[in-house]
Length: 183
Image 1 (tube, helix red, strand yellow):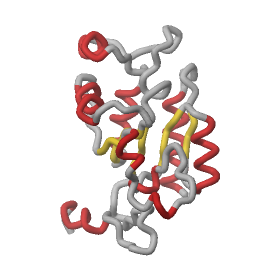
Image 2 (cartoon, rainbow, N blue to C red):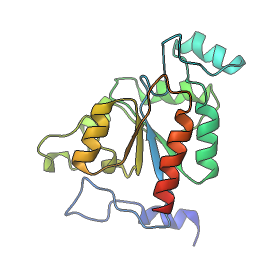
Image 3 (cartoon, rainbow, N blue to C red):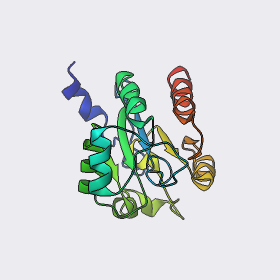
Image 4 (cartoon, rainbow, N blue to C red):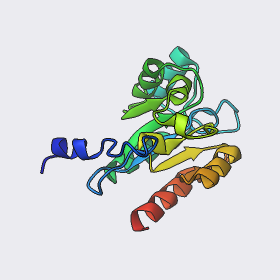
């Protein structure tokens, strides 16, 4: 079976639970990243990606990319993960996609505040959490917010919380990824 044929199996298969996208085991796993204080860290104490493209991106968009992001995403892709951005900011998908492309990072999907508010199946949830990755078939979400981690526990989705000042944050993410793959 080709990868194209597997795409249909990754669609929403259940009208009874429209908030959750059900996928077969042959579908790639999805990981999403928050932006503010997760991938973009404006504190001068947080190391930033370096190089010509990083400098151009910072000049053009004014947002620094956290050091280690490019290598982490490259490793996740090598392991077969699809990369998503899930932010509650109002940045447009065009803006986010182009900002990341300047860093050499391609993402498979983007959820911003507008898309989150119109989450499929959200009417079946009494109080929609600030982020709800299962609605988009996301297996793991990376965020700096302890509140998002608590919402994950309450609503049954996986979150790995990373502190903006943690220099080994990439290892924490990869350990969580390994737990899911082995789990």
